Image (cartoon, protein in one colour):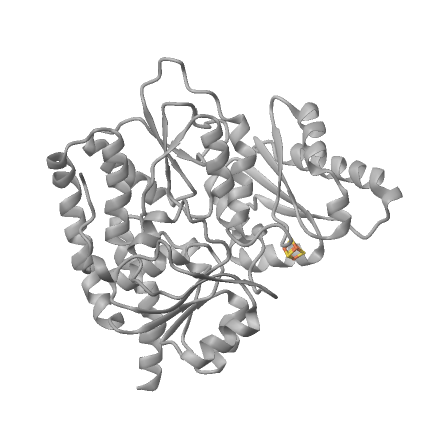
Length: 429
Ligand code: SF4
C-alpha cells in the first residue's frame, strides 16, 4: 500500500547494488562543530561549550555570524597548549569556566561540553568531566559531552554525536503505552508543525520529535516506538535507539514530493492507515507541491549536477534532483554512504549514477573540471575556487539552514538549485 509511483520505467532506476568509488585522500569537509549552529536554535534551553582552540572559535563565529544579535547559546573555552602534567590545571580551568557560565546564565538546563581536535583537548576526558560537573550542578543543570572534532566527524555528524549523547537520558516508554511515532533529526519548527498536522489528519496522534525543543521534554523510547529518520546522517543515534527497542521504518527521506510521500507512507503503513484515508490526506498536498515545483523544473530540466561530499544529504538530494527536476547526475559524492538507511533512496536513483564515498579532493576536482557540470553542490571552501573557474555552485550548508523537508518546502528546495543558474543567466544579460 501507499506505494510510490515510479517516475521512470523500472528498468532505468535503481542503484541498490551499484559500484561505489571509495576515496580516502585529503578532504575538504566541515567538522561536526558546525551542527551547533542549527542545534542551539532547536534545543532552546541548551548551551554548547566548545572546548577547543581559536580556530574552533573562528569557525563557529563565521558559520553562525548572524547570531551575534541574539543572546548566544554557544561559546568556546580556549585550551592553550599544555603538557600532560598540566591536565589537572586544564580540568580545574574547565570547572571554573563552567561554574562561571552556569552562575551567569540561570536559564541553561542542559550544557554540552563539545570536544574538538587539538591534542590538548583530546588529552582531556570530557566524558568524565561532564559526569563530575553533572554531580556538582544536578538536578538544575545536566551536563553531557560529545565530540565535534574534525578528526572524528564531518559536518552533519556533529548532530549525530549530540543526539547520541542524549539517547541514554530518554525515559523508557510505559509498559502499557500504545505504539508511538518518533521522528528523529532536527527539523525547522514550521516543518514539525506541518508534519504534526498531517499525521493527525491521518489518525497518527502519538508523534514525538527528537531532539525536542526543551531539554527536559525528551521523548520516551521502547519496543513500541516506531522510528522514522528525518535526516540521513544519524547512523549512531538510530543504532542506539534501536538498541533501546525502537523499530526503524525503512523509508526514503522527506525531501521533494516523492520522498515525502514515501516517508509519510512508511508511517501510515506501520500504523495501519488505509489507502483511502492516506490518499485523501496526502494527494492534495502532493498535487499542490508538484504544481509549485513545475516552475523550477523548467529552469533545471536537463541541467547537469555534481555533488561533492559534505552533508550526507547528497543521495536523497540527487534522487530529488534527477526524478522531480529532470537534472542529469554527473557524480554523487557523499562523506559516508549508509546502505541500510539509504536503501530506499538508492533504489530510486537513476541506474548508472556515479556514486563516490569519502574524498580525494584533487582527483574529485579534476573530475568536476573535466565534466564542467551546470551546477556543483559543495562546501564553502570549494565554492569560491570553482566559481572563479566559471562553474556555478551551491553551498551545501544552505541545505541545512533552510527548511527544505516536506511537501510545502519542495519548491523552496528546488529553488535553491535554480537560484545560482538564474543569477548567472541574469549576469550574462
Ligand atoms: Fe578545526 Fe578541529 Fe576545531 Fe573543527 S574541531 S574547527 S576541524 S580545530
